[in-house]
Each structure stands twice: as C-alpha cells, then as structure tokens.
Length: 96
Image (cartoon, rainbow, N blue to C red):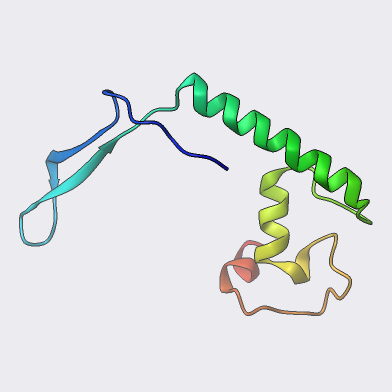
C-alpha cells in the first residue's frame, strides 16, 4: 500500500500504568493517521477497485469486512461455491 512517514507525534514509550508479569513496563505506541495516509489509502482503494472492475469477477464483496469474513469462513460466505466446505475455524462456528 505504501509507507507511513515519521512525525514527531508518532513514537514509542514505556507505559506508566501497564506492566508485564515481571513488573516491567509495557511498550506503548502513540500513533495517529495524517492526511498523507488518508490520501494514500484512498488512492490505493481506487486503484484496487479499477483492477477488480477490469477482472470482471462473478461476484465481489460489498465491504472490506465482508471480504475478510469470506476468507475466514468460506463455507459461510455468500460467494462460496461449496457451502459444505469447512476450514475448521472455531470462531466461524461460534459466531454463525
């Protein structure tokens, strides 16, 4: 997709509150998206949509979440050709 630029408001530090089982402070990551990342994500998404349209798939997901779900639980996907297939993912069985 691209790279995320370094900015002064993105940094790692030792968490003053949370510790591991040995009492050592955990690593805290401070990060927020900037305009550059939003523009890069929008550009990448538009290019991916263009590629998908040119491929002329029989069907496609309506959202990234739906696409992820169809990969995780293919036997439950509305796009699955064989709904009997089971990938053994217990979380699919529990949620559906």
